Image (cartoon, rainbow, N blue to C red; front, side):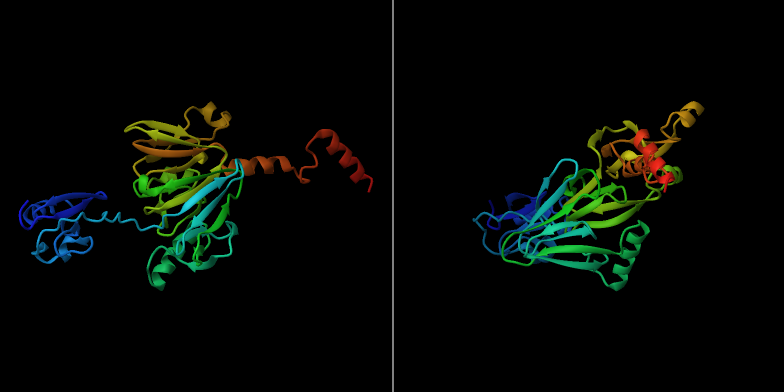
Amino acid sequence: MSSDGGWYYAKNGETVGPMSREELIKVIPAAEGPATMVWGPGVNEWTEARHVASLGSGAARTDAPPRPPTGRRADDIDYEIFGDDMQFVEVTLDPGEVVVAEAGGMMYMSQGIEMQTVFGDPSKEQGFLGKLFDAGKRMVTGESLFLTTFGSVSNKREQVAFASPYPGKIIPMHLDELGGELICQKDAFLCAARGVQIGIAFQKKILAGLFGGEGFILQRLTGDGIAFVHAGGTIHRRELASGEVFRLDTGCLVALQPSVDYDIQVTGGIKNSIFGGEGLFLATLRGPGTIWVQSLPFTRLAGRILANLGPRGGKDEGSLIGKLSNVFESRR
């Protein structure tokens, strides 16, 4: 190794080296250019190449470099999901960590948790206009203008739990393993680590927007942290190969990766459309990518409940009891 050796650079969280200064200069353009994280003579911590004057001129370093930074922005939270059909997730926060949730989703929290209601996206550093714009986008999706943050303000680990709003499952979405972005139905988001951004995604196709079950607007989750999504019934994850087509009821789609093409197609056939009981349209998904589907959309559950309530709040359900109730009421 030459006298100015001992240089390293970071690639995908791993250390590459040692090498000479001349060798490092050659590989920087093929790495991340001036933003490449380097470590070597005269550099005490991992630093972007653009901030290292002449890439050092001191003696070669012989000690091993520290582990390169991962670049993770979101808090690295721990969690545990309890229950079967009526689940809740308990999030454990280290001192200083924060979890962001929809208003009204909190179940319980330990003494060292501080709750704050915030306007806009707490994962972004922005002025009032930026917060107003983010809040407006949330309002378009039918959500509250505000989000709630829960942070650990003690010197020990603290817990906060969030409950599902109706029978179903809570799914942990590790966005760093899913390409950093996920699109889901607009009421699916439950909570997430600070650093995950909650935005909106517009349907580009008119049919998908009008008849896709969720309208033109879906939720977009971006970042490298953990987000928790809730949906009804049983949740099934399916991997679609490139070009693979998968069709399902429009209300059963929970989430998908942006690489999946989402469209709506007519069921086909007059009898199928009118008497099939499955509606006029089906959602058509084309891979590659991952999708999540639910067995019991909330709209289907609510529709079944309303259909069985009857005009008198369900008194006609169960013919004998219903008839007896009618007899006594008629004699009042």
